[in-house]
Picture 1 (spheres, rainbow, N blue to C red):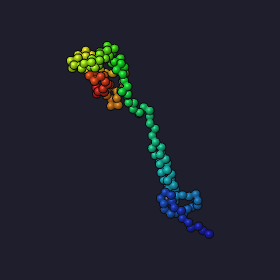
Picture 2: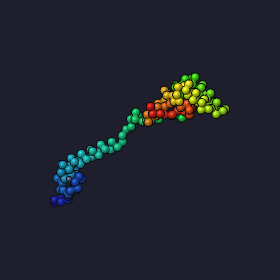
Picture 3: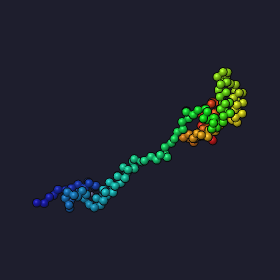
Picture 4: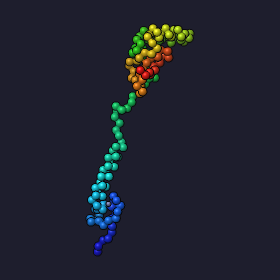
Length: 142
Ligand SMILES: [Zn+2]
């Protein structure tokens, strides 16, 4: 008794009469190899969907909040400048420092902004400066 059952090709979904029953999944060799290539390609894409992140690509954001005035002073201004800045802050508390006082100090120290050597540039590539007017670290384009 001859079997007349047709198989459906798993690649092109065409009905065909199998030459080797049970083991045959495709109507032709070309469908078999095409299906194999497709499976191989999709396997590759699966691997690509989970890229490994290199540690060098992780941006390090400098923590500007925790820098003490002393740390900045040692790096950029020196001990003398720190003392000057401290006395400026003190005089501000007791009596409002005049514009002239601040201008004099800035002139003595050679400018309002002082480059901070022991801090990294921020994520935008701006460099850290100690702002004598504000008494804090600011990032400026150079
Ligand atoms: Zn086929």
